[in-house]
Image 1 (cartoon, rainbow, N blue to C red):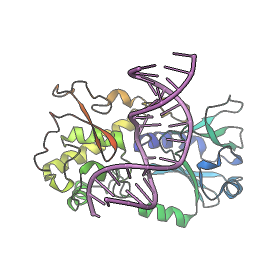
Image 2: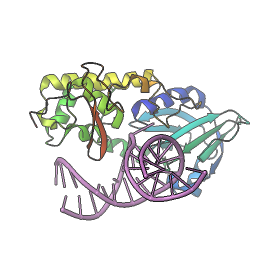
Image 3: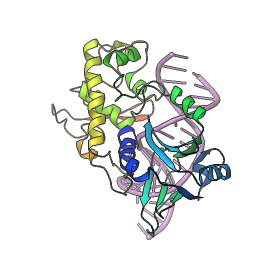
Length: 277
DNA sequence: CAATCAACCTGGGTGC
DNA sequence: TGCACCCAGGTTGATT
């Protein structure tokens, strides 16, 4: 679930709470979530480090450590990072626990084990960054950037928007929401989108992401903030998960289909334009 | 290059 | 209650 707004919500919460904290112990309860380096090395290189920065790139939460390494957290489908005060009770599905110098615990909880923790050198962070597409909320991501992105692609627009190598941060939910707002069918060929539609899509992408952040993320099932609280954006969804219900804009029944294997929701009334496929 | 599918996992919901 | 089955917000790699 965690897409850009869910990770950014976490980042904003953790930044003031983690900066200056020192990691005194790391308990790997399930080595499967430690991507690189292997667990023993991961632990050895993390213990004793101070958290100096809390940033985000695409769907990765990045904790900059005093050693110069970066602890990158990818939440996968169901991963949560809970920051618990000293003496807190157990949480379910804790895979890795970081004990801080004041007794707090940063717990990576992930029922499905799709999430990953990576300890990366500066060089590795740079390589990761280069492999990811532009940040849709960055100032230098313009309508022209989006136009260029869409122009060269004969495939369908939804998979393109979700491809992290081309555009960073959009997942299944926010892609469907943005396409609805822009009035573009998810199966439209990317290069068939008109200049006017690109403009609408550009604004729609930023709007749904910003609204997701304001609402502290979408909790359909798993997403929790660092305090264990759900987000509220699920109440603002216009099409995602609303198949069979009337469109809030035109009343047409929302439909569900499958695009590239992903459940895809759209309004046949507002997102008709399939003529140019 | 584009599309499809399987795989990686667990848990929740549904229907019998 | 039990169980088989389907579904799930992500990513990667193999195949067609």
